[in-house]
Length: 131
Image (cartoon, rainbow, N blue to C red; front, side, top):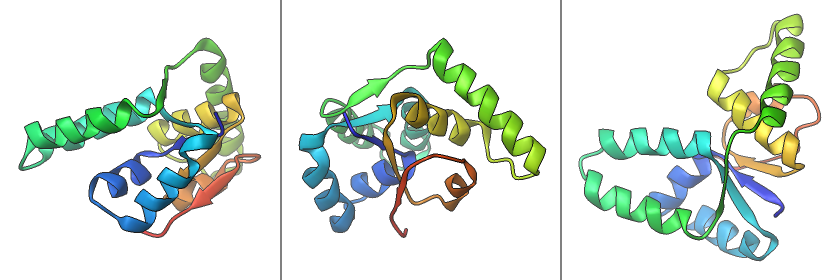
């Protein structure tokens, strides 16, 4: 496994963004994962949408093609370390985004995202996609 899909990339995939779809298909062989935190965020979107049933089906289809990474004590430790660093610098990011970043750091994965807030996390390898 080499890449962690951020919520933003999954949303673009589900919306039919051809550039993101092509990139995800291209990287599939190298291994793709999604944090359980992103899964929670994605379900929020499903249930806020006009078509919860259809969107849930599409989400479940995608989730069968990736590894879902749970939170672990090691990821929580990385989260705490990174949160402390960001607080010292005065450049905090959202807690859920930081849990996703900690997951990528803990598993040594490249984070695929459209969210520039992740630039604040030291040593996080990120590939950005414009929204």
